[in-house]
Length: 246
Ligand SMILES: [Zn+2]
Image 1: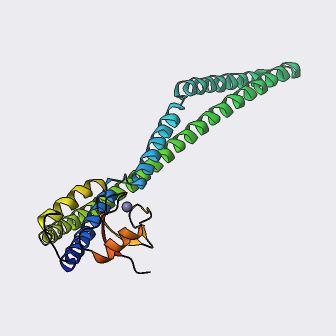
Image 2: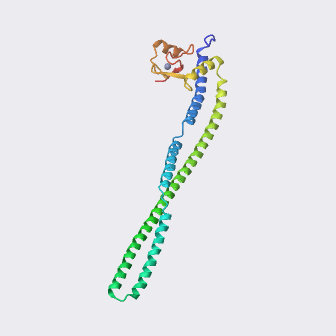
Image 3: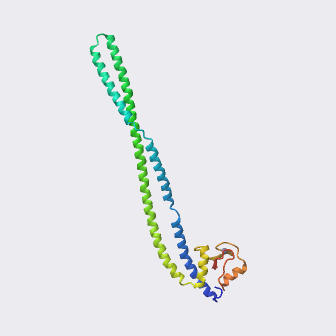
């Protein structure tokens, strides 16, 4: 690059072309960076979905099938009902008050026993129904989250599509701008781009490098003002496009 003689005016013109090229490159870098970042909402929804899946499994595993036990209890109830009917028949045939009292006591005892069993059956039905409700709620929540997830995925897919479209336009613009820059300067720009993508050309700001912020000596500031050649930072090797206005 040093072998090509250029006037400060030519150098300044090339620098402004470089700055224009860099604007496009910077935009490309930013969009690629955005696209590479894992979508936080998707990750959060993923975690919540996994939690809900576990919840469904946990709730589902808590189910105790009381059907058999309940049927057993129900047949006990029918047996006791039969016994009560038998005792009621016997009560009709009782000859003495003492006999009648004994039969009535027996009937009373059987009724209490039956009440106890019926209460237990109702409790079991309640438990099963409550369990079914919990399972249904867990499924409902899971489905709702899955819907949200799908919406979010569609939204992100849309974003990716539009970003790809923008990248396509920027790539064309980039090619157009690269053609305006002399080859030797472009080679340097590309080399520096590997180290500082989209951030190769900077200004001197209050006698500091706008890129790495090291202090610039007076000689360097003079070179930047004169622009007899491409002036670069000793620290980060960036190319100075000029001095920022105070
Ligand atoms: Zn620097």
